[in-house]
Length: 163
Image (cartoon, rainbow, N blue to C red; front, side, top):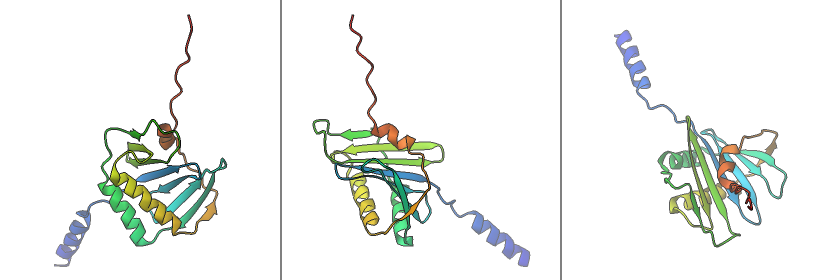
């Protein structure tokens, strides 16, 4: 009987869905601030301030409710096929960018001047609210931001060759 109970416990524990590990980066830019927020399914939120030019990294510990809120949104967020929603007639404004890595798959989205999907705009605002509620402590940890920076920096056009 004891062996049967152990087998049932192992079976039910093995049937639980595996925890999703993700690597998420949020970017915000406007004339007054530029920063990244990094979240990776743990209770730590990293804040990388790049305004005006020197990169400074700090962190805070999220409450279980904040962590769960972010993770639930990431689990249900549906990235569109288009990777950019940009109002091209406006040079200044505010830019949000989202980069989610699940396993080997990268999903990215850039929104400029509030042209885009409302669910992403609301998510960006909620991340800003969480950031504003916390005091961050400096750290020397460095992050590779190349994936999200690929969508932020406009490609350089080829040179014009006159004949």
